[in-house]
Image (tube, rainbow over all chains, first blue to last red; front, side, top):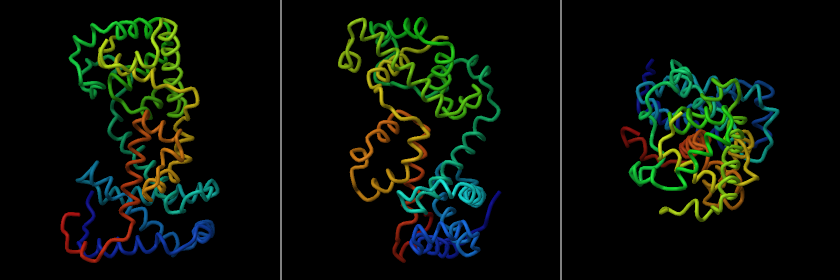
Length: 220
Length: 89
């Protein structure tokens, strides 16, 4: 999947994208998109390609150019579909880039994790996930009374779904959005589920005499 | 389930930093374009939209999308002609 681009062609594309970004007011952009204006849509597509390129070069360098084109096209369709939800609180092109960036990240995560089921993930030996805290060796942390208490509270006070989400996201490193798909929910609801878990832990810890300062202090 | 001490410590910190008025990913996404424009303009986006800043500090997926949005918006900012001769950009 490669799209040949010369430095000159790319520079011309960049210049067109930067000019197109500022060439219309928000109202003009919305009218162009709603009216399926060919020039407007072509300009917006160029804007999206240019905006997606740096992130894709960083995340998928070998396929960045082709992906930028593909995701810009898909992003354009999504913008067409959702233009009525644009609230005008930012520039139209900023909003459109946001839509395309969300789409690109969602697809990249899906591709990265597509062969991993939740069962496989939870059964695998931990270690692949990035450690949440490298400041202290595990032995020192394990000796921390607060850490021992949290371990008990996770087992006793949280729900099965909360424990599953914590393990998948925090221990195994699967993105929230991908865990949500596998748990039959969505990313927003899963964030809320984890928020409720954190709140429950906080209440239980406070009931045992640990205030926020005690919890954040580095040393036991 | 065996959570490692490092994950338990992260949970401890997460519990300490939990606030009752946290917003979710959907609400964060709604405000993300405005937040990004404030940040790019050099304004204090976290002061203007503190709940968005709080969510971005706690949600890795939203944070990486915010960084991708910033990268994209920077690419659309005016660039001098000499960038044509800078290879590998």
